[in-house]
Amino acid sequence: MNTIQSNIINLTSLWKSATQPFNTYNEDKNIGYCFIPNSQWPNKIWLKSEHDLTILNEIKLLLKSELDGLTFSYFDIDDIERNKIIFDYHGFDEASMQFGMSLKLSEKVRISKQLKFKLVTNIEDSQKWSQSFYKAFRYKISEEIINKTYHHINYYLIYDQENIVGTVISHQTPSTIGIHSLGILPNMRGNGYATQIMHHLLNKGLEQGCNLATLQASKMAKSMYEKMGFTTEFIMRNYKLKTQ
Image (cartoon, rainbow, N blue to C red; front, side, top):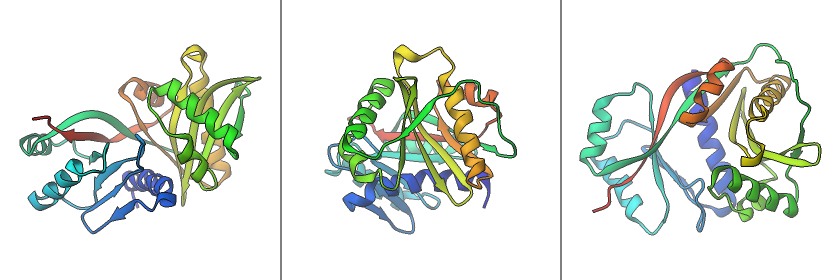
């Protein structure tokens, strides 16, 4: 399995884990999709094979359905302009993009700031995580989702002394550690916390037998990860339907 496949499998595995308690994960030979009612996450549709008109129409029907808030995420490995033109022609509108990045793990990195990683294991911490994530991203992962999934998803609250500085999810698939939802509270930014959190998780991945770290970075965060040695391997283009 190559690093791109490992990245995508880790991400879709996380989506599956998040939606299993709600019985809302679906896939066939062409697409996968998952959603949680009254939530903004994960609520995704993705391709499992090459697209054609029939598959694109199936995706459009899902985006128009009562499953409110779905996004079609296309893993663009070659940055092919042709695909962007096809999606545009068929009524898809690119709402955002992220960069699929990976780093091969070989040796531990130095930790210069001791932070506390508190694993969410109860309702009180679920609430704190949800609130902290919203402050960092202005985007909601509900307390209900965290309560129903913390037994099999690692949600961490990050503390410096007694102060919450941010959130992160780590998700392991065979020998890959996926790092997701790394957010720093606005009043805690500019202190190097994101880098130190990453270093801690990279070391943890090595300890757990992982040889690869993967993530999906925003345009703003991409350069920080590049400084750590991550390389971009694909673009995740997130589509909605064009408004009439």
